[in-house]
Image (cartoon, rainbow, N blue to C red; front, side, top):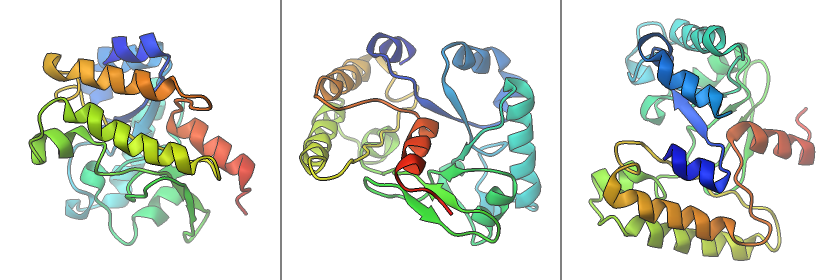
Length: 215
């Protein structure tokens, strides 16, 4: 996956369980060396609604990533996209600026919290390798065909207003030898179209704020 991203000039957002910084620091260092954005993905892969102290885990996750990377993460993805009614308020208190836990199709929205607004960036369950390959059990080539069908629709709609296409890749699925070619040719075909760029979450957030100032 890293080779594909580098060849195509893609700098992804890495949803990172903070404990990885402590157990596999060489992996996180490789991400930082490539200039990839680190996004807080809780401390461990445990659903937020099953934690005894959600607020403490959110704080610890952000602090561990910041201490390791030298930069406080701006975004958050809950493990399994889990959350409670209080989650976005806790995240806002800790300075998180955007989340990816809401399955939005193609445009960001601004969410109100008890402190400061948070932006929900587009994310989906369709161009998502866990859903396609591990749950729906599609053959490997469906990665390409579904991604392209999804893209064609959004590209046509983007003539009227900008659209965002989210994809989710996990190394143990998209990075497998029998799938990586289909992943690569999908990204290559998408990026060959005029006006298409590959941005991480922070860049999308900054663009959105420049177009729609958050008050």
